[in-house]
Length: 105
Image 1 (cartoon, one colour):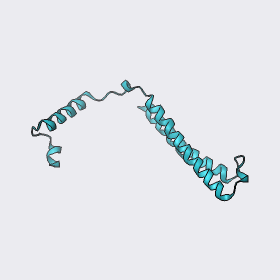
Image 2 (cartoon, helix red, strand yellow):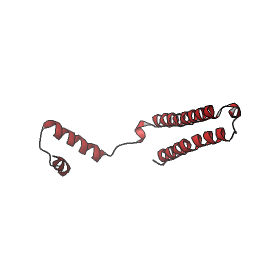
Image 3 (cartoon, one colour):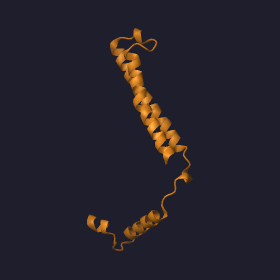
Image 4 (cartoon, rainbow, N blue to C red):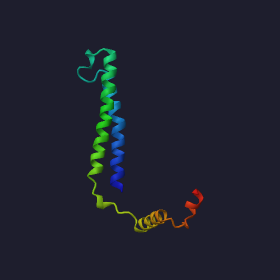
């Protein structure tokens, strides 16, 4: 679980840092070619690249999440049994003894 949280934290940091660095670099003429752009073009290009950088980080994080082994995270057996029982009761029409369901009705 710590590995998943660490990946989320790193991805979140990059989603904040990269756009700020890109905007700062364009607005302070730190990136080559940004001095020849008009102010309007500079705003559009830097904003577009900042948005693209966030999307790249999101795609990278999704790829890392998909590479996680599926058998690594096992659900709690008692929770699964309880959930199956609940679904079976709802689909069979048998009145439920669950107090949370009675409150909803």
